[in-house]
Amino acid sequence: MPHPRAGAVGEQGRLTVADGPAVARLAAHLREATPAMLDDLRLLVEHESPTGDAGRLDALAETTAARWAELGSTVRRHHREGVGTHLEVHWPADPRDGSDARPALLLGHIDTVHAVGTLARNPFRVEAGRAYGPGSQDMKAGIVLALHAVRALGELGVRPARPLVVLLTADEEAGSRDSRPLIEDVAAGCAHALVLEAAGPGASLKTARKGIANYTLTVTGQAAHAGQDFPRGVNANVALARLAVAAHELSDPQSGTTVNVGVVAGGTRPNVVAERARAELDVRFWDDAEARRVERALRGLRVAAGAHLAVDGAVNRPAFRRTPAVGPLVRAARRVAAALGDDLDETSVGGGSDGNLTAALGLPTLDGLGAVGAGLHTADEYVEVASLPDRAALLAGLLASL
Ligand SMILES: [Zn+2]
Image (cartoon, rainbow, N blue to C red; front, side, top):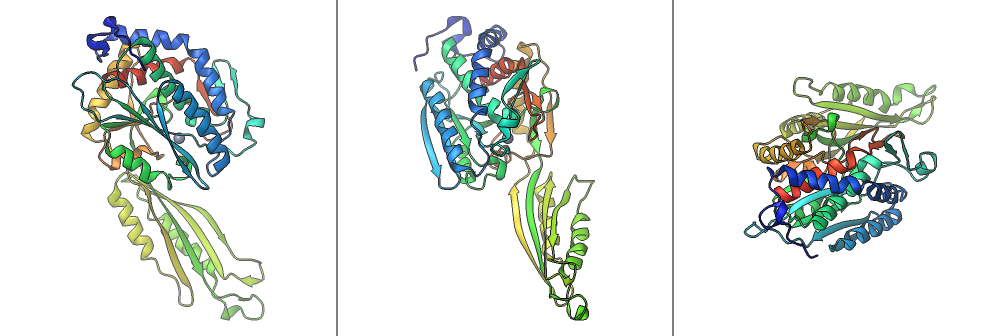
């Protein structure tokens, strides 16, 4: 894609973070593009794309790939049977002379938590300055911001500081089991990661996230007739109840570690001593050492004689710690935001994202660069329309300056 030199933007068209007027120009350009951004948001939201629905995720990947191709990008499709298609987009930007060749990684996902049919009850619509619809904030608007940030750079002839790789995966909401090796492979060659997940409270950036581990405890006891043979039975439900309490008590408020016994199921009928019972746990932690402590304790749990316990599971997302290497990214984002008249805070959150994976590789990772809104994962999910151009300008400013 040709990049006309834009002398007003600075040397070689490069935007510097101190270049307030250039940021303002990007923002003004993007404000004019707000209707086009809403058209794109509608296009993506109206493609329902629950995790695991490979056919719908393939279709949305094609729609999304076409939009990137229009910007002169090359798109690699990583099709996975039963999962969908992960998109790897390379924007053949013309980075400023002398930049190191490692690309910036823009990281997002095309899947949502919303089942097919949600759209019929909760159609895409704009009301009172809010754009509603399933997956609007998490994270179809994030994809729209990335598209329009890149488009604005091209249209204004602002050269990015680095080449750009955009990775949009199809299984983030289920823990990125399939896409993780791809994310790690692509991230390994990049300079830093900018994650398109929803903005934090007050439009803040996310620079730390808890890690997540998931476990299943399965107890097998001995079935027996509750009337005739009660003493012969070994009740799996009772054993599991004790385990559930023990697991819950592995939580440590001091270090922020939580063990949530989210699902408990067991037995078949009231008049049968329960033979099988199962609990599903969600563990969250700020420190990977805490995850190891909890896992050791879970694997050390014992049940009464005659019963058997199986513990399955592992860490799914390591803790995303705020490291000093993130400082330059935060400062750059603050300066771009200041040029837009915004104060930008950073925050840490309990929810995980693919940012956990890039941060765990040691890649400086700035998360929460997506849309401002609320209600993610609910039927009231929306994005603030007025925030779209400013968030896209923030992204564009970062791509131009980092
Ligand atoms: Zn998300």
